[in-house]
Structures are given as structure tokens and as C-alpha cells.
Image (tube, rainbow, N blue to C red; front, side, top):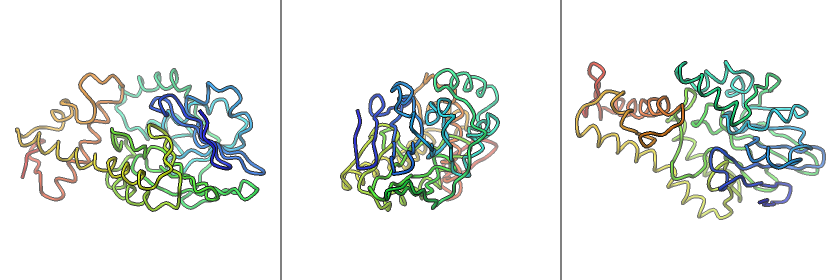
Length: 295
């Protein structure tokens, strides 16, 4: 399905881009055609990307790079803080931050399911950078970190369309389980994204396209609330008894028991640790010999 907003076309992936798929955004100007990310769906649509001159990644994760191997003819730009993750496997390993035993399984999975291939030719962009595509079409980058260090919204200013990537407004809530993810940054980002000058919001996954600001703010509020709900769930577990990080992670903080993704255990620990650090900082929780307890 294709949705049109002037110079912007949104091509919906399966189930509105539910992971492992995603939604493809194309922006056509008088001189250049730009793709925001390249999800799995784009591989299945023949010549959809054949005229793309430039790919701008809103951030680096495997599901946003799934057709880059087909676009050797197109330039690639990535926010400076995510750049090395696009350029090499070593950079992507540091970006994920998973245990070495996990990383071997992750690489096999992303090469098989997402056709992962490094792009050493990727060039950096920075917060506030603009691209002029001709015929009055203009894109700007708005740095919104938290999901990754370099996560950005890409705003097509002349159409009022904001591609907000993995601020995906899903029921799962914000994901900040990798090495360059940051809970404090995500909290700040969730305030800033509401201030974008837009009238259409496009997510990589789930919600896909929202054209009503009241609905957007309501969905954003529910999405953001998942963070404090996780904190409350953590406190309820610690009310039962003091526990180690391993015990808390094994109980399933983000994912249900048996969730099969190779990164699950690493994401659980990284996410929990950030919530625990917040609770330690405000003296709600104490840490004694590796055991967390209510203060």
C-alpha cells in the first residue's frame, strides 16, 4: 500500500511495518530522490528503489538496512554517532554491545534475514543538517537520541512530514536495550518529538502514518508511559524480595519467557540496569554486594 503526501510517498510493510519489516519513505525532488532507511519490504517491490540517489538512515539497526546491498549506486548518509555501525561489523558490534557468544548468532541472523552488508562508504550528517532536493523539496535532520545514540527524525519541511523512525508508538514502548541506547536521552526525546513542526508523522513500525495531532499526542503519551510502567513493575518485584540483576533479568522484564531472539538476554540486562541506576540515583533502591533491594 502506498500513501502520498505531495513529494513524499510512504510504502507500508507487512502489518504496517511490524518488525522484522518496516515502512519505506521516499522523497522525490526536482533533482534528487531520497529514501529514508531500506526495510525488508523494499526488497520485495522490484524497482521501487532503482531511482534512489541518496539513502538517509534515521538510525542504524539491522531492519533499517535490509536493502542497502541493492543500492551500491546510491550515496548513504548516517548520523555521526551511528556512522561506524553502518560502516563495519566491528562498529555494529560495539553499537549492539552484546556478549561475544550472542554476537555470532546475531550476525548469522542479520545476514540471513536482513541481507546485512557493511557500507564503508557511508558519510556522516549532523543535527540540523538539511538537504535540498530541488523544486522546493527540503529535508532536515532532528537529533532524537535514546533508541540509539544517533537516532534522528527526518522532516520533509515543505510537506510537514516527519519520519520519526523507532519512536514507533507501539504497545511495547520505547526500546533502549543496546550499548548506545540511553534511557535518560529517550525521556528527553519523548518531550522533543512532540515539538516537531509536522502535520504527518510516519513511524518505521506499527502505527505507520498518523495525520491527526490529537491522536499523535495521545499515542505518544501511551508510548512514553511504558517507561514508568516498567519502573513500577521493577519495584513490585523488589517488594517481593531483594534480587540480583541476573535474577531480575531471568524473570523477563521486557520479553515473555522463551522469547527466541538472540539478543533478548543482553537487552533485558541493559534495560534493567538503566532503570536500576535511576532508582539508585534517587535512593529508591540500594545495592549491597550485587543484590538490589528497596531502600
